[in-house]
Image (cartoon, rainbow, N blue to C red; front, side):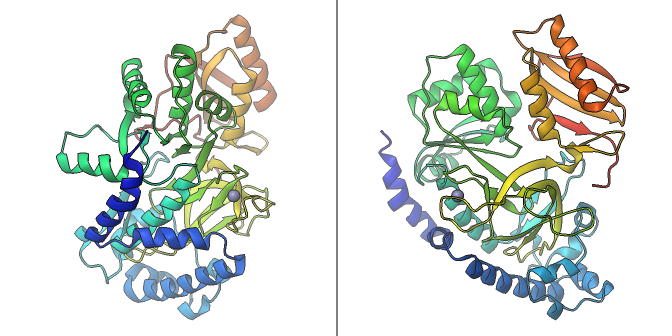
Length: 455
Ligand SMILES: [Zn+2]
């Protein structure tokens, strides 16, 4: 019984918000209402925010003034969301090279802004600054999506995350205990039998209502519980998987072990939450309250539903550092159906993963890493984990962890599948290891292509 939950929700959270002067709870309540607004009302709201943002970006940043002037564009030329395609894409290189010129002169003191730094797992680390109002608006907005998992605000939260265990500080202890309700962390950069057991014991003693964390770390935890501690019953109301692609073959095991469907979420450091599943799990609702999202093909044209394309985001809330038409480096596809939950926010059918994760074949075919990983995982039961590295167009390295059912036949099966997928003349080598190495961020990447591509 979690007696603190209603006290945290109804007394502590409003008091803390009042003390901090934060409107996030008002935003949260507003977000609960607007998620059912008719699509034209949502578009109108986005359009108004966009017009204001474009004016603001032009008037108060050196970078955006130059960019508009260089292509002969006036701020009045952008009246609708469709007009935005007149503006060239913003790249990671722009963010890295022109960072200072992108910060609005309305926010001269950088030390009062919040810095978000990407992990650099795509090869390039970038920094985006945002202002306090933006942060608090997004805080209220994210709370709405958190509750789509089945969790209610105020209830206990456990995480599988890369935050280093911090030295004890009474203020953050109280804040975690009473307000954010985070009480158990599994540090995912050092997951070992001892740390997992300690985490699991804590979850048994104090059952969590929500578990939040890296998609693949959940999968590993579920695998551990099934094999080593099958007697343990952890039954959260919600599971939110984020920060990495949740593979189709990982879902069933997580659901089987925790008796809870994972709520998959997609976001990035630069603009925060981009899309999130609701309780129906029919796709990921795109977060149009804070962003405008495009999915475009190689020629820059909008992709129709079900066709994967490059994700381009415009942050409608961040005024400290306007981010317009930013190409994140991921691919996704729109769904062709609305969600049966009745929310009007459109759906991504699926997040395909990073552009860098696509394997390119000799005949110029692109194969998404997510489909490859699922394919190999399902077809090769002798392998517990699998990582595909494309070193060159016809050369691969496979990092593999042997499973319990591994035999000589597994190698023959792998050889057959590789030839079937990539052609008869590809060369490859297998590295057998105990664990697939992670990125510095703690994330796993299952498919890394080093081949230059123009997707
Ligand atoms: Zn829905």
